[in-house]
Length: 474
Image 1 (cartoon, rainbow, N blue to C red):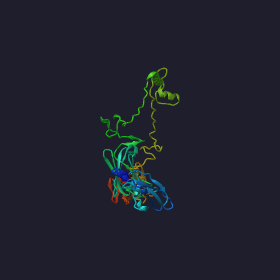
Image 2 (cartoon, rainbow, N blue to C red; image 1 turned 135 degrees about the vertical axis):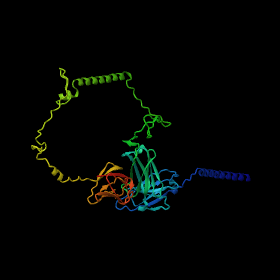
Image 3 (cartoon, one colour; image 1 turned 180 degrees about the vertical axis):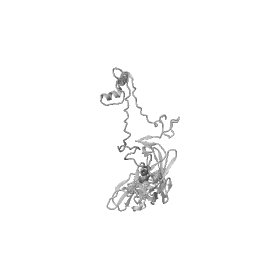
Image 4 (cartoon, rainbow, N blue to C red; image 1 turned 45 degrees about the horizontal axis):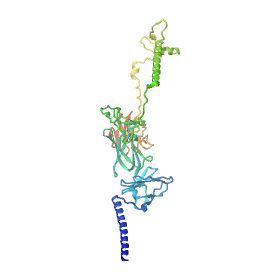
């Protein structure tokens, strides 16, 4: 009896030890692989309250911005939400350690970027939407998209710089998401380590649902034309690469990736077989017949004879006659000799001194009133930027001509987002012209020098407003 009980106790201990050992191994494996599977109850329901949009309903979208260590690299946006208060479900495990939540205003194109909230209710205000959801940088040369460039946005305040690369498929466009509001510098690197930069204010007060920054580089670079890459003229080196770095027709073929079979196109051989031989004979016969026709046509007088048969007179050689008379050019018409005693202007007979009724005396010529000066119209001629080639006359009737992004300006520049609403003004003063800065964000430049206050404006001067350059002319 004692032996039987002892056997049962030992068997129970063996079962308990096996279960404990299995649990320990499983825990060790989870710890070694770094797995920390969240419980199903970790999904949070967050209520988001947005500012009142008035009578016009505004659509909002919510995006999850996972950090690099997140298990799920991307999550689809949810929405649209049209109410002032709505709820979303967020799994913190999908966001990673430093993941964020973005709330997009589809009407304004502005975004509120939030850290993972500690509470389940988030009350957003207008000031919280301090990011622009989409900023597009269009890089061109002579109004054509560049093939390759690197675009970097360097913010003036907080936030790290953002960089994107342009390839031929991008058609000169670089797109940035969730850009912090504030002053920023857009730097374009292109060609042989050439750079060009422009100061751009990233503001929530922008037209449309995005900000577009056009940058026209000043040095010649490979561009994309009609959807095809076009390289600038360059010499071909022995290696088959031009000075611009673009492949030339002498370049070696690029090998296909491993594991793929290059597609072969069969080109039918011309002139092979009986059908090809017959085709060659027919083509040769057509060429011989055409040459014979041209020879006979030339012997019959060519185009001149053909036109003459159609009733059209020409000065060319006529068709040769049967007698074989050689052709001579048409003689010029005899000159018309006018009567020297008659004035060719008034038709009156001249006196003995050669004067007539329309002859003016020297005194009359000397004392006559001076001819009035021909008035000139000042104007600005676009030489660079989105308004290159445009001409803007300056009408200065006692008031200045203003330039700015607002449509109420004398010269509205709404397509250049780097121009302020009222950027600059041109005044007429003391027989000359003066240009002044009207408190713009990016300032004005006269002949490459930034203007502080106002400066005289002379014909031929180059005036830069935002990203647009003009030449002042009279």
